[in-house]
Length: 81
Image (cartoon, helix red, strand yellow):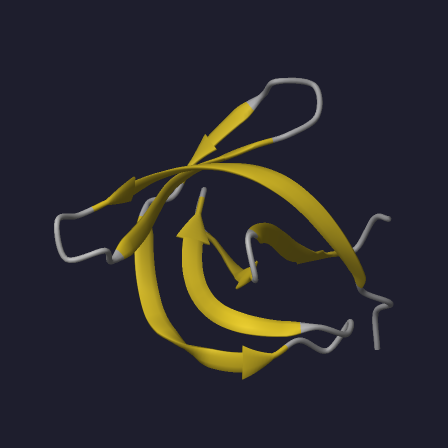
């Protein structure tokens, strides 16, 4: 099984008038932006790499990614530290 790491990322999101958060785009350290094509699932979950929060199971560039909102920070489970 592939080793996964917790990688904190910047996220551009929309907060609606009811307070629901919808992530729209992930922004890497180098400024490159990746739009979230589709949110497949939203639920509370624990990450395999440690930590827990709201899991947004997303499709980004035809790949499924697990994006977590943990307290007031975002992270993804990444194959690179």
